[in-house]
Image (cartoon, rainbow, N blue to C red; front, side, top):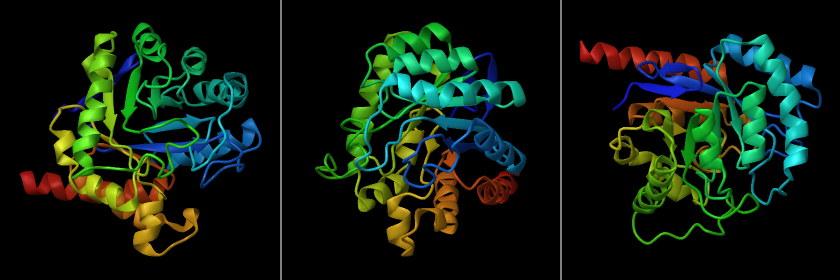
Length: 286
């Protein structure tokens, strides 16, 4: 397994698990939509996440919650660019990620300070995305999903013959190989199995359980289980924002199975849990 991730202008070590803190500047995200109506409010929240131990900040301007309405590039840019510029000014040492499927948004966000492009479609939805990221030499996250923004988080495409991890590996491999063919350096790629995207809870659970199969590819693996529907079903917690303990459990389970980047809402709780899990792993290796 590789122990580093090359992003724009720096290399991030994954020998210690990295926590990617989520900041959605959207009105309709499933858990935190509408919480940050101004740049100042979003920056204050981001500052809290950094103090709690976030290694990376992931900024999203378009919701991918079930049945979310897609927004055009102009609206997405209006939401994210002022925020990204202020984050880059306030926290120059914190790597910034833009969560988008649009190459125009990615390009302008990178100009504003983003070091990473987190594409939940793994470059499926915009043929210019791979070339843009290759040219600007950023880190990328390629996530398994099916469908488009409007339906990728629903069950519309959640049909699997046999083990769902078989499909995740075969479909995501196509996108990874295509990204490298278009100039994305291997050391800039992180892969994400896409828990909750085009997957019923039983599928997400199985994919998480078999995560070592994805880790075997040799890329750093990112897992985003935070507050997802399968966590709610397992714990019986209906309110997404109340799924803290189950989400932390999923993050630790992912770490123990080889994930080294955890994308989360609840940074402090996850950071503490991962520090303990990491210490136990290191002690076992002595």
